[in-house]
Image (cartoon, rainbow, N blue to C red; front, side):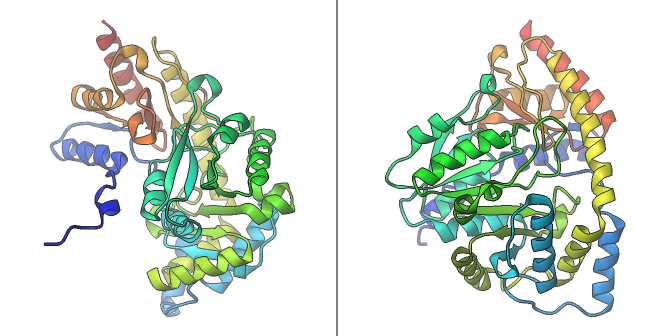
Length: 390
């Protein structure tokens, strides 16, 4: 038998899914597991979205649409970006994909030539490097630390750029850290990228999960040069509790969007038609539901941070967005995988080892779960830390 594609064969499996799978096995045996692994809102999809999808099905809106997505949805996305992000696109500049993850993967396939480098700050969302490698590129990591709030400085970005660099990835609010760049910090990074004529891949999937303090802004909104060098990626999973609907999108300058749509036409034909009608309703009608979810996330953020930061030996910046905390557990003398494995086995608490995100000194906890889960899970987490500290 011939060998598989070497790049694909070398892809690291998702640590998030691996931990979730182990936790599911324990639950199936009747074990009460406190799960903090999966980044999936525990809310139901708002009724207005489900009704729109039901109506589309009843009206037999189930046929192929344009490869770049339903025209009505692309128009609604343009209206949303103009209204909320102060960036103005035409529908031809928007490509709707089968989720935020496929949108990102196709973006990298469109912009990367073999051997091109893409700068990724660490900690990073675990799929960025694999997507870059599958597209033929080389991920270049810039290490950030808890002391700096896990934020990359302009000086660090400048030092990482080489003649082969084509892009930098910015994720604010961040998965896994929950940290955000201020508008001033974001613009400073973009200025460095523009100096070297780089693309900026701005992953804004958590834009609505912001808890006071730092405002969320879009990189493309800072001016014409920023706009011309930015690919904005977003989706419906996190904001609207639509994880299983699999809808995301990218907005970009016209030549890039045209190439991206052409690529998608061969990979997927088009996203799910009736789900896209639900997404139209999400953008037009679901703002009150989103506000309720963000209010709940704010309370959970405050409580989980209070509990985790009270544990001796833990260092953890207070997350400003998304729904994750990323505590540093290095003082306990265990690498992140050993820490997470033992925590699951001994206390039945599921977290994701930080090594999956490029930082072996931390673990990630998602607070997209109930307050009861947070209270019980952090009590177990604290007990585990006390025990291994001796």
